[in-house]
Image (cartoon, rainbow, N blue to C red; front, side, top):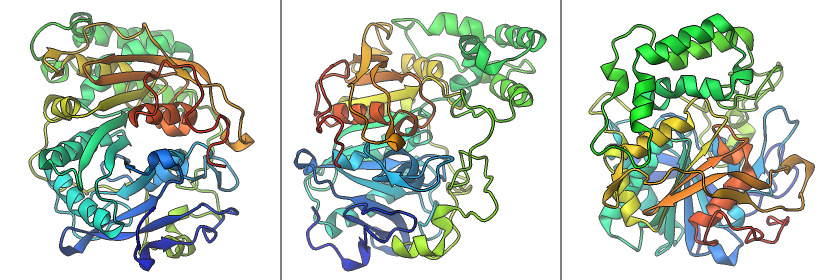
Length: 473
């Protein structure tokens, strides 16, 4: 519970437009970056009522770069959700606020409601700005000496490790006491490695969902071999991996047609114009998305508005009155590109943290699970390179539970595979697309329990740590 929070940040939990229930105690608004009053990040903070979570703070970051973390709040793990195709917001019984204090932050500058001139050139700059914001946030809400957990998805695979590393470097347990990280479907290495190299094996696995004709399938098989991707997978996706850094297969290939990720996407859109790279089981019709993207390809029905672009919503959540878009470009100005975190800061973050989790939805085509496994095998931490044993022996288990409501139905049972070595846990999550807390909220809830140390293993078959089926209701 915050101590004497400034009244300008208070949000009336019964006054959120279209929401016909109390969302609970929360605080939102613009927080300056350090002492620079001209640049600020927008945040929305929910204190938890769970006594187990009083000493923890979870930070949630969406990716892009330039995509708002309010998408995560509204459609993934916030206290209320408004999912694709649904009439109005509903209570989220799987909100992470049931487990811990949590803050959603729009960053870097230029994203969402955040204010000022974007000056960040690379991920080190992003981390420096975030720390300036976060220390002000800790002071404002008297949240010193808390355990910090940094989470996010997609391009937050860059944000999370760099911010965590910068916090750990400070050795400041009063403000920046990082205990762990959880990253969903991340960008961790070379994009081509996580897409083009593994496209054909992925299409093979889900052939009926891609529904490509025989002639095109033969073409991409030929390209997969001629580009060297098949040989690359055979040589490097092994356990343990060969010693030494792997070559970049995309840069090494000079053969035309090696952009297999794009080629396959273009072909499948001809067959299924409603194909969703974030969740490949999606079929027509396209459901409307109150945020415009990613659910409805930026289409909004006549008479509807993007939710956070509404003036009444902006006033209710202490946001500046301005145009809001879920994703924008230009938030990282041209400059020195930061090296991929898997080969720079992430190994040290794993070694200095209590728990580090990479979780991936197996129905995600935008970033493919096999590609992340290749990145892991090319990463050295804890004195060894990659996983020494192949993931697959241990099943990720989501507890069976009474369903709290029709709007929040969620999966249970064996829902993936889990593998841990030297402090890094890999979770392949079944029946799940790119946004794991959205498509598999119960699975993400369980993964957060593990990150926070509330359970010892993701293979456990007991109840959730909150009352079974009663997620803060």
